[in-house]
Image 1 (tube, rainbow, N blue to C red):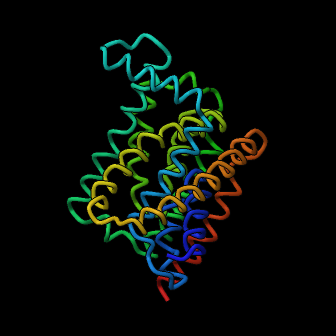
Image 2 (tube, one colour):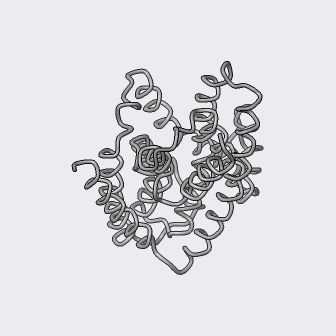
Image 3 (cartoon, rainbow, N blue to C red):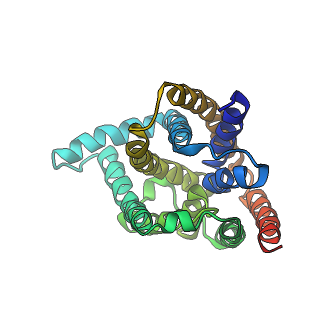
Amino acid sequence: MSLFHLLIVAIIQGITEFLPVSSSGHLILLPNLTGMDDQGQVIDVAVHLGTLGAVVLYFWSDVKSAFFGTCRLLRGRMDTEGSKLAFLLIIATIPVVLFGLFLKITGLDDQMRSIAVIGWAMLIFGIVLYWADQTGPTEKSASDWSLKDAIIMGLWQAVALIPGTSRSGITITAARQLGYIRADGAKIAMLMSIPTILASGALLGVEVAATADVAAAIDGAIAAAFAFVAALLALSLMMRLLKSVSFTPYVIYRVILGIILLVIAYT
């Protein structure tokens, strides 16, 4: 792949992975709307690893706490904030893993990669995000995250496997409806992305490991680096803006893009 193509894919993935606008939807649209070749699974895995590095770095204190908490869980102990966080993240990840395996086995994941599906998902779930953000109470912080809320947010996260839905968008929607303040709801959604990206990256990684060559590995490393920088900048900006701005600008973007895509799909 050319450096320009790698840069475009990495920037799109990096910026849209954590904004509530659907990274997978944008990556599917790139070859459909521009005529560029599909970037392939090697690059998909690479840019996901890049964005994973960004969220781990940004929330390093929470990630470190959850890591050591996981070690305590493996010893059968859940007596610290870190072990509680690790347990809730595991619970919240189970629905998306199971639903992802179902879509993979049935082949439905490939059937949903269409402009029409992305357009409808962009439009509908953008409106749902606006509704949740405007009507949801603001009474909970990240420290209030409970088993019940982890299960609910995990079920909502599984819906994000529909292209155009947005993993971050749907989990933020769930968090706002459950009463979390914007910044803390987004923080929980970002932390939930870590095991989810690890799971999807592992699944794709197994598929591409046997076919990847040196050239593909070099392209992947370049794409991962670009995606890391773009994701870190986008994540930092969003978390800073959430202290004073609602999710409405993202909703407007989703609705406009969704309508455009539906016009393209049906004409």
